[in-house]
Length: 303
Image 1: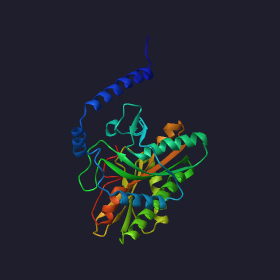
Image 2: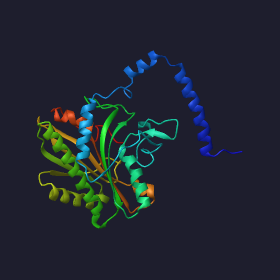
Image 3: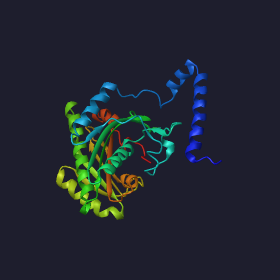
Image 4: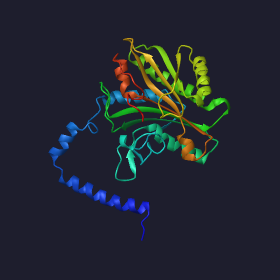
């Protein structure tokens, strides 16, 4: 008798659980201590917990218009790789049908899709702070670790004429991040200068890019806006990066934002739009301390 994929996976999972129990039973206290010392996926963050919580609070304070979710440490298996052009290898998969969260914007897309299924004409605005884990090697530099703190924003809803949904979401997200950086700088006696937004798009999203440039210039006259062709295939043809100059003159770009087709795919409705963004909170203490830390969301390639 044939066994379907679900039954086969369930049987295999039982075998893997048995194997895990046996492996754990063979481990000695010295093995645990050695892994704690040598395995960067389990070692504590270099960021002090009180500092992390203080920056979490600043981020959430800057986003009063967004529902704040406390996500589970795990998400459905494939939450990152099924909806986004990324490899499952960068995510810690479990022997159950789940994975450790490697990017909260993917998980927020699941919640946005669920809400839009219940209220198709509604608008969804979500945010979260989450400690994510990625299996790829961390880039060099202080504060760059395989698990790190991220603050993410997500807007989902129906498409509107003249790309109004996407353009308004970009301006709303940038307003939150600007407020977050201002609050952090004020409380640490630091001033950031010469903010810059880089708007990237492919030819299909060229008009969206042009409209976004105009909207940013109108909403934030102090921001220099740079126009570039998009290079990363991870985004649905449209990306915005935002950064500031630190007190030592170095340009730091911790905010990464894009349009994605994830919610449209999850709901099987191409009229649904999804704009998500994130900032690596773990890098902000370094930024405020005057130490340069370039890169995107967390200094790693999202794909």
